[in-house]
Image (cartoon, rainbow, N blue to C red; front, side, top):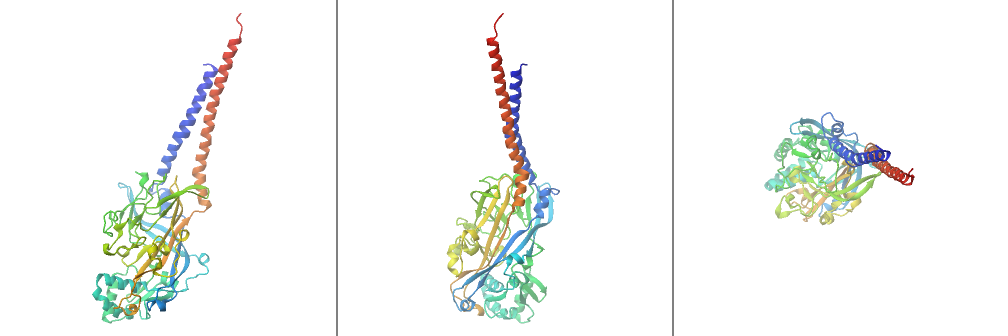
Amino acid sequence: MGAPTKLTVTGIIFLLIGVLVGWFVFPSMIHDKLLKSKALNPSSKMREMWSHPPLAADFKIYLFNVTNYEEANQGGKIVLKEIGPYFYHEWKEKENLVDDADDDTVEFSFKNTFIFDREKSKPLNGEEIIIMPHMAILGMVTMTKMIKPAALGMINKAIPFLYPEQDSIFLKATANQIMWTGVDINCTSTEFSATAVCSQIRENSENLHKVDNNHFMFSLLGVKNGTIERNRYTVKRGYKSPTEVGQVIRFNGKEKLNVWPDEECNRISGSDTTIFQSLVTRETNLGAFSGDVCRSVVPDYVQDNMYNGLNVYEYTAEIIKDHEKCYCLNPEKCLKSGVLDLTKCAGAPIMGSLPHFYKAEAYVNDVIGLNPNTKEHAIKIFVEPMTGTPVVGFRRMQFSMFLTKESKISIMKNLSEEERLVPMFWIEEGLSLNKTWTGQIKNKLFLPIKIVKYVKYVIVFIGVMFIVLALVVNYNSVKTMEVTPNN
């Protein structure tokens, strides 16, 4: 075999290696590894990080203070002032895990632990006096009016015994009492109406902190801190089908909900909100199911973006969209766009929306003091597409209640007859990965890819050079043969 032939063969070998490995074998290997790396196998590192995350989420809570409660109690329009954020570190862990290898699923319950960050909350410390509609009383009255309006008279008689310090529908308490330690529900009275109401409270006290058989504390989040939720999620582990990792297939053992009037809205779909598949495209459905709102929310792709040197996809989401009419609990009185009725989901007459009624502008003027804007109140998510890692994510939600005059309830008889949706509080739950964590993604994944990217071109270039060299050698050989004289 002559030199040109050897050089040509060597060049072709280099070309084949460069093309096959660089454009086919290595990408396929990375593709396969990325998909399998998310599998929630019991002994895997991913399973440990998924069930007990190494980072706490940022949890902020904002309370709405009624600045004119005396005027509002006499029918005036409510004026609100936002107080917050109260900043907490939220450890969102998964407990009581039960695997089903045949189904390739794992069942669990969330456990949320909140730790107050005094520095990031300054100048707030939780001892601020907040005035807001008394959610426990308002909830009791509203639910009674919906279910058994004839019992409103009994509720009216019971209120002074259960809440002896309440002379209006507006509660005055510290932020810590409202959020965590609770406001007392006094069930010591032997008066008939109080006894009847308290018997119901004792039977349905899972959302209250029970001090003893006669005292219960009502708070927004107190019973959730450091306790394992009763709700059970069953999700795909992604071992047999990597693109299904984290997808919720059952909630509390059921494959569909029984909350909404339409079958489509009762369908359970989307991830558990904490993990997404690898190799995300702009068309990938990144829907997530939340038991807190009894529905799946699908974010909308906005644009390509950059975050700490990473190429990411930016998404946003809404609590409820205009066309999602199947979430209307009362067809004769559907809520206006942007607000979700959580009454059947939460067991209380709570309405969910984005903060300050962002994307629910029809309710902004129900009160004075709101300022909805995209930067502070929209849901925002940045996802690194190769790993499916949410590098930035903010879930924001406001909770409101309808307030109106109720002639059969003494502390509500002077309120405005106009029904108004009043914001109580809103939360922001999220995480922004710092450069240390995004740096690990770049170094462990993108650096090898970058190296291979350049190496494959070097190998192809070497192959081309060998072939060029073969042509040169062959050309020179032929030229030499042409000029050599015959003897």
